[in-house]
Amino acid sequence: MKQKKIILDCDPGMDDSMAIVMACKAPELDLLAVTTVNGNYPAGITCVNALKTLELLGRTDIPVAKGMESPMVRPSPRDPFTHGEDGQAENFLPEPAARPCEKHAVDLLIDLVKAAPGEITILCTGPMSNLAIAMQKAPEIKGMIREIIAITGAFGLNACAWANATGDTPMSEWNVYVDPEAADLVYRSGVKLTALGLDVATHFDVNLTEADIAALEKSPNKEAGFLRQAIRFVNSRGFEAYCTVIDCMAVGCAIDPTLVETFEGHVGVETAGSLTLGMTVLDARHHFVWEQLPLIHIARRADHQRFLRLLMKLVLA
Figure (cartoon, helix red, strand yellow):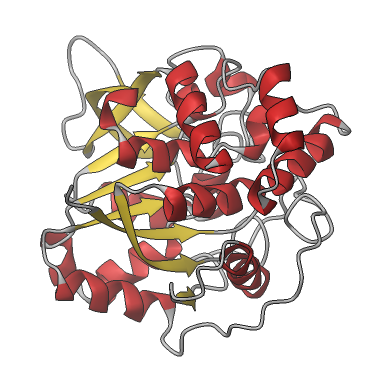
């Protein structure tokens, strides 16, 4: 079986940490690097959390590079949702012995894509600041990236899109809200973008059963213990277990694209509105569609039960 080459661009975050776990343990994927960005926490913390997660798994062979420390043109907002004192649901993993890569995340992204043109899928589970700057610095890579699969946006396809809005405006998703200018640039890049919006990634069907919880409790795997503590952490604050695995949906889609049903739609990113900053506006009209807006692939629905079975299989393996 030929492995799919991926780079995971992320901002750990408990759910990004679990995405790292899934990506490392999936035999279908070849995780070339983890690049980190300002988002859930400052870039210095997200970088350390990525290193901690890889050491938990014994995968210090995978390089980690620290990336953009702020959005492209605006101050970094404060996340109204917390991932805990350590940014990892208060798992308090040991400080990592490994050090980050000497290269900046932007440069590592550029170099890896150029070394394997047409082969690399970038999984983006944080703000798109690293990707956007990489495309500005080396625009030729836009024709070399196989695909971007991103936890990005909310498209109003069901009640979950707005009920579970993660940004700090009523109709936004956190990754876009943090750096809407970066998202706008990547959306317009022409690279194939599969957007896993809140419509599927924070769906209420993404919830573990009591049997799943019991299996995590019994498992000797450190990563199972990490997920169990993360669920305990969010439950104690009135949130459901889906919060702990939002970013895992991107990894699941990379492993098995049939988990998600997509359609093509013209989408614009709101970069100005005080009530709608970070909103991803889908032009779903039958007539007079704004075709000047970028055309992206949008997840309409997902097989959440199959996704959860895949997640549990990999965590317990």
